[in-house]
Image (cartoon, rainbow, N blue to C red):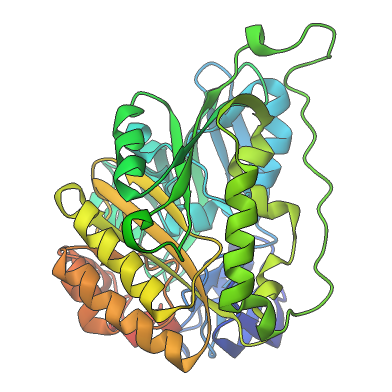
Amino acid sequence: MTRVDTSTVPLSGWARYPIIDCRQNVPRDDSEAATVYDGSKPLITRGNGRAYGDAALNASGVLATVRLNRMLAFHSEDGVLTCEAGVLLADIISVFLPRGWFPLVSPGTRFVTVGGLIAADVHGKNHHQVGSFCNHLLWLDLMLPTGDIIRCSPTLMPDLFAATCGGMGLTGTILRASFRLQPVQTGMIRQETKPAANLDEAFAIFEAELKQPYSVAWIDGLATGDAVGRSVVFVGSHAGREDWPSGRGDPLQVPPPNPKRIPFDFPALALSRTSMRLMNGVYRRAQRSGTNAIDVYRYFYPLDALLDWNRVYGRRGFMQYQCVLPLTESRDGIARLLREIAKYGEASFLSVLKRMGPSSFGYLSFPFEGYTLAMDFPVTQANLDLLDRLDKIVLEHNGRLYLAKDSRAAPDTIAAGYPLLEQFREVRLRYGLKGQVESHLSRRLEL
């Protein structure tokens, strides 16, 4: 029997809340991963720790996939990549962008593993056109607590496939996956910047630009009155070779930025109402209307330029709150959320609005057609109380919360937002996963 590297370490999600001492196992291959599942304790699989809350935390056992990071095959005819679950999106981009390929779906960071992309069924700025990551997933290999490895796809074990896609790691350990990339001609995005005076203007821009591949808005969370929802909408598409200046070199050779580090945890004063209002005003005025070309790193992953940006929220960490509301409910519901936040007086600088397309097939997949709002809040009791009030507004407008971002919601809130939760629970029982594959999140939410 090969030895698996094991240690007990304090772990958290990206938001640094909560922090739990976990027994972490770091296997190098399938056989070592199988030895971690000895039946004596429940486990959860962890990728690069970019889920914000407690989805990849379990004091009794964490199976980390950071060493399962090999790329296995690529078919240039159709852009199908097969790789292990620990491969980072950043590595995929660095290898395949110079060859003219880019992920079909990308979240706001490239420092997430393929297994994490599947477990959270991530969505990007183009969900209204292409759906979420698992819509382009051909198959995956899943290790069950018995050590058995099962290949799942839309036609092979479809129930287990639907439970795994968006299932937050609660069906076992994803070992390998095969999925499609998209061809691109350059490493640039043609971005159009469109300021919006309020929420109605922002929605009008989104709806008018549905034929554009990418769209996202930054929202000023402190705006009140007629300016509620004041924002800047960024619309984008992949630039063609005709957009590339002659004599500039290879249009696919776009190096990532040299990231900076934040060397210390910010004090609470840095996140005061006054400082937030100042930052919001500076940022909004800096965004000028017009079209320009920026590289894919600046468009998709602006925060990756600061490797430790989560330290801005101080030692206590923060909570990211992301909800989605149906199309018919989005205008009124999001306006209510923003007014509640502005009334409370503590706003998030990282406030993002996106237009979503049709629902995903995963039992616990987050997206459905409507609008999603994501905001960050420092961990305080007052903010915990605020988020409880936001939960009620979300449910009154038939919305749901994103499990990959959550660290504090109640079981009833999640159950009300996910109508296929019972099917997910049935799959967990059918394959002997209940009690064997568990996380802090699954226990807290009674998944």
